[in-house]
Image 1 (cartoon, helix red, strand yellow):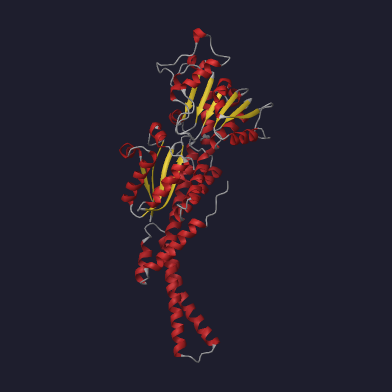
Image 2: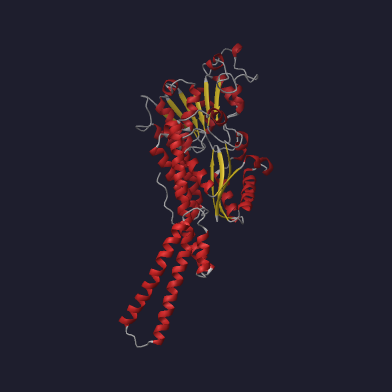
Length: 485
């Protein structure tokens, strides 16, 4: 069996395609179950974030696996296979391991070095464990990816090379003004109470906003987040407050807010351009009727640096959309008085060169870890054959001792035990060097063939080897240590 990944990301596909291909958790679970039901795959995991959808599988046939995984992605995302195929990338065996380890280190993120991807990888592993679609290979792979990512962040300056997507997005809104100066005294509305929204709310609180209103479909989660924000250490400004509101109250909160961050799991637009236009018109700082907000239909200020200073000077409502698919109507880009930064604009702006030395150091870590992981997997691949060989040897010893008992029935217990121990020592010594050496050879590139050679030389029963492999796989599925938070 071999590791295969088929996916698409911000590097291979436009945001419009990623947006349509987004998968809710329920859809991810169904994709995993259907992947396991497909003939080429025996294990499966899906890594779905705001800027990537990747399906990992342990397959027995490369071409059949690529075709099946591509078809499954098309079926479950709702994007036609013909349309999706040009944006898909494929990684196999060591290249697949290298890809996931690079992703875990933040090398493949919109903002190089961001650490949130580690939580998303952990979630992908947890879902595979929950559904029992991740066996020994994918459990080992994803747990090692988490360790490699943590190693990169602890041993290098990759954290300085990049920032979290939340901080990066807020700094884009601030347009070069220090975040603390820009956010000081503002009123914020955060829509959603998941990990990304919670991070945004905490970042705004530390930056000095006066108030954060949290809106969420489940009010209890919004209330919990508001409580956490007001705990010691969750804020930096004296007099800071936080509140939870129902989603029905969002229009009223929009009229009061200076900055809005939205990141929900909704599959449609949460804030329409019309709702933002209405909020701008109802604000106390709305311009007089003869200078009312107008759409920038000439497209002169779709986003950021292409706008003139005069066009940016009248921003009264700053909006950050971190959701995929997007929460905020892209038409908001054309509203005077509003400034919108979304995933698409962050992708365009994320080409800033990070610290080359840190990135090179992380790449070295990834390469070393890929080699070590490959060696460990190749060594593990021969273990069932070695176990089957030693089991066969033990059976031979047992059989010969039984035959000896029949031919020499007068042996006492002490003599029989001594003879048995001697025969076992001889067999163990004869097998020790070959089995140790074959494990060493199997860990080298191209070493997979040594297991076949061992089975052929000793005429091992393939069913016995397969039984050991199945037992190992089941142990890997059910006996997995969760990565600490």
